[in-house]
Amino acid sequence: MMRFDSEHDLLVIPDVHGRTFWREALNMPHWSHVLFLGDYTDPYPHEYISVQQAYDNFVDIIGYVVNHPSQTTLLLGNHDMHYKSAIFRRLAMGSRYSSMMAQAYTQLFDTYDQLFSLAFEVEYEGERCLFTHAGVVPEWYRIHAQQIGELNAENLNRLAQSDEGMAALADVGWSRGGLSPAGGPLWADCMEMTVLEDGPYQIFGHTQNYENQAVVTPHYACVDTHRGYLLSEILASR
Image (cartoon, rainbow, N blue to C red; front, side, top):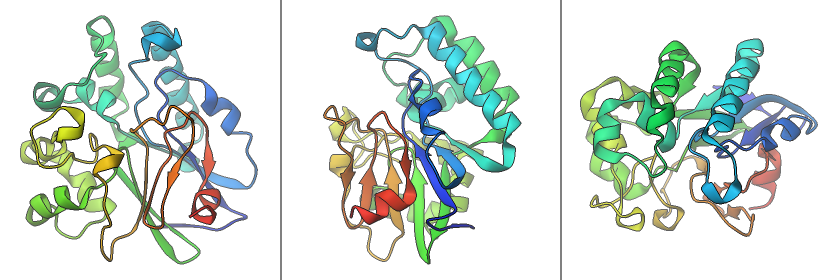
């Protein structure tokens, strides 16, 4: 498990969707590793980012990782997984899926498969922190606990290696228009999140706050706000 402190911090980049704010975030001080929370694809129409621009931006992110492999981690979001996995696409395809760019995206994910994870776990000054795209809702974890085992990044990442695991990741709860009791860590909405007893501190994106204010509680933080965050900043604002 990687360990961080205020002098060697973790830089967290929430949902990209073709936006370029990640470049400016790299100028923030005192970080030694950068973590992207996923959703690189499928820009919002009202932001006037074309699907080609979003693709090119994603290629630039991959290029950055290739040039800084030990300093960068890329997580997957639901808008990425529906290009990467046919099972996920069939069960839980998201809006704004681009048929025009699908083949190109799938090829990128296949080529750079080893760069991507579902979950990332670190220790910050003795505190365990778990990162996923949308958060691990306690109810979803209870439903799939036997399949997952202990809640940690390694076991969550293992879900993507089987059809049964991918089906669990495709759970979509009522708040996002699905039929599952709770959304999985690629689809959960922040309003579904409750306290995960004895669990790690969770940090995730996915639920966009249109006032650009992170939702930070004593137990979790939702930071989908079009800007980068240092982990120390998130934990200090609880």
